[in-house]
Image: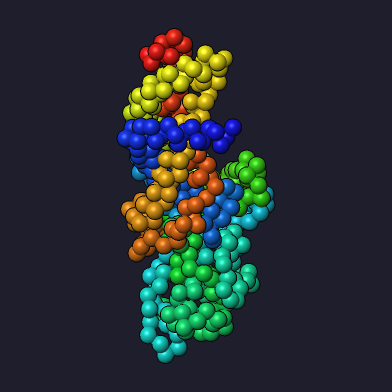
Length: 430
């Protein structure tokens, strides 16, 4: 029966090649446009190594602090956090699987092998837990230890591309380099991190206890240059983690409140959707508004072509009035007629949808610099590949939109065709 359905669908296409071609092109273009939008929106939420398990993340990228002793209207400050604040709040949490603190940005720093020519790299200052939260692909060596971090030992993890620039290969664990004109020992080499990985992107990763980042503080040492990320054991633990964080923050605020300070919670920590939709550090994210904008965009991209495709589908079905009349005369029910026509159109829509999906993949790869956002400071887009775009979730969206487009464009024409009077249908009338 399925083979019959597919055969009838393609036979119907051949009967009216121009209308059929326009229908296929219109459906493919609609799916193409909407899938480009979906890919652009979804990539930041997708797991792309080393940033995996995003559905279990809670982020505190910024802090909002106020002081009652400041003047009215200017008593709030926003920015990254100090190590002291993170130790008293994030590091004190016991519910999560792991927590980490790292530099809110990165620093352009020269690196050189012994006697070699320095090359500029992006230095990311991190703690030892950073490599437990994020899933790096290790080419050689291992991350620095808790003891090395606590002691401020000058060790460094470098990317594979930096290792090849300096030494010609990646098997360089234990070698010495000069980073920012200071001696460091390489403890490990990792695969290059995609520039679309906003939390982990960099060329080299060093303990911030061995740099000036840990001492770069302001507002009496409560604010600094660090961000934090919490990895939950399970997404279901989010409420418990947030409750525990609230208690830790309240305890910390009681301490710093003696000098008039108070850290405003602002709904933190944020899950990945909230984190990426937060416009500013001093403004809580509005996820509902973001989703609403996305739905409106999808609806416009679907409704406009659906109206045009509906008229084409109606025209194609009117040519088949006699066939419908004969089937009705031989006992076919309205539901059978309508479901068959609907399924035939679905076959066509899915075929066009697959074409549109493949076109959107090619288009996204060719124009990735336009559609995807790299980490601030990165020169170009890296890490956007066929593998990162061809995810089951994206394919599922494509199939869903194919079905929805078919429902919008073929539903009413199929219903009208099934209600055609048998006598009129046999005489060729609608």
